[in-house]
Length: 101
Image (cartoon, rainbow, N blue to C red):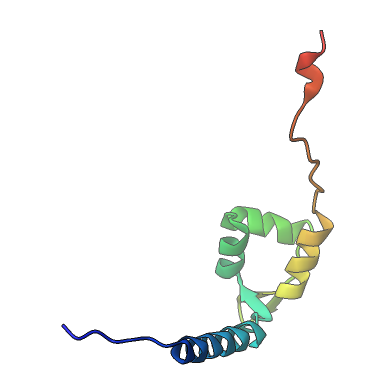
């Protein structure tokens, strides 16, 4: 069994390579999101049934484009829909009402 000695220079070189790899990883552009989604992708994304998606189309909650029998939904419209229906959370870590008698 051979013993290999690691020097400070080896560790510094490793650190430099590691930092450059991490820097490249964090500064790389994220994967581009699809601009148009099909019905099954929207249903998976929102975790809804086909009927619910149809109801959202019928009542005008969600916009869509139909091309040759295939329905497409703009991902930007879905983001706007989710943002407009966002409910702000209330932070309640401790509710002292049960202490009051």
